[in-house]
Image (cartoon, rainbow, N blue to C red; front, top):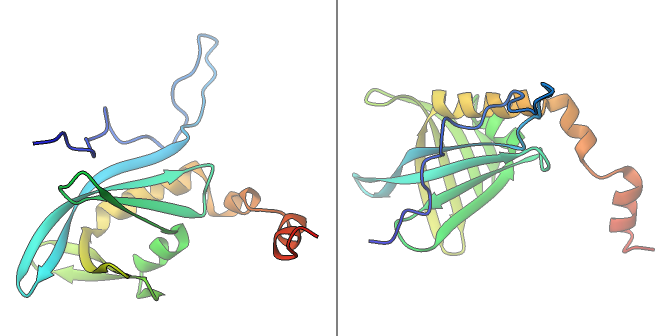
Length: 167
């Protein structure tokens, strides 16, 4: 069997607070927050499987989250969508088109987050532990707050140049 491309993090999930530092005592904030969670996936009527999923947030790209689904094959499926969409999906139905998220309660699993994903290759309905996803998301906001993420985007001049075709 090939090695699992989604090994558990080497230690606890990356912290969203300053860590490390040099001998002088300075600290550096981590560049990312990631965690591997096991999600339940609907494979058809009354057939449920599990898929290990890496949740990753990079401070250099604070608007987005990356979910990498390890499907038990050499390939992986990556989905990128906005952190705001994930935040809103933990509270109520959020999204349209390819990605929809909503909170639910399951007597067997407690508070859950449902993710409905659509692509030209198929669709999937997944269920995650809402408290675990919320904890991970909170750590991303501790690393880059909602207010400070606005400073990471392109400037108005850069957007104008991009939309104007570089003229």
